[in-house]
Length: 334
Picture: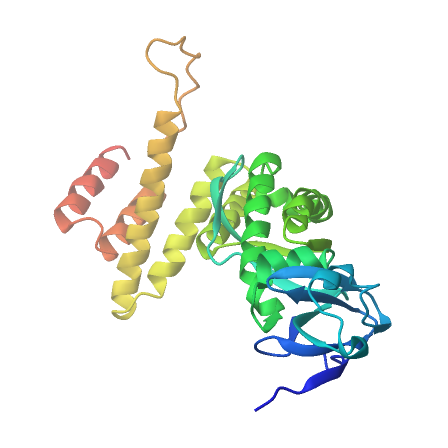
């Protein structure tokens, strides 16, 4: 069956994500010298024959002649009053701005942090781009495909953005606690580094925005812990805070009221023991100068001491024998 000679070449129905559409969809088309090429605003038409770009046409109506496609002089034999058809392909390239293109980190980025030592964060944002060099883009990226959309190139562009952004975060961010105030500066710096990467593909990076850099769940816990310690202010108060937390957790433990009371006592004892160990570790070593001894503390109130011993006995923290021995010592001092 003979091929239909194409006298009007146009592609009006451009999709929202469509970058390139070849005409015809498959194989070369038969065009005639004198055919009308209609290119709409936001489009560029690139003529190809035998794998070579013959010419690029901007928006408007163009009559195909050997004057505006000089390379056809050696490709078309002028017979039948110049109406001899020739085979070629036309690639309609969309040159509008493609906004709201998404990027994000598929895996967390690990960074050094002066406050938290090591953190893992996720980042995401948007960018906009445009096909700046249609002929280069078709030659290097699209090839012989009949259709090419933003989905086909987004994964590659996303990997470039994440690579440059990771370098910037590692070089300039001392702590993730400072990040919210640096989004604009980091976005501008990342765009400056990516301009050449996009240009090598025939693309132009118009805008790049960082919407969020958020810590992973483990890093968030470390941030919350650091915030708690900062609010407490000193180690002594911090240990008391931890002991109180342990008592609260123990009170909710299963096993009834008696078990809860025992757990509360053990939690308190553990907190007091930990605080004592830290205090002793911070005391001056034997080789250091000793500070003058503090005045001896006043004797403890015997009644209060006996009451404390009875509470410990009731909670099961000391045995009856220990209670009787300590009680006898207290009574001797009366």
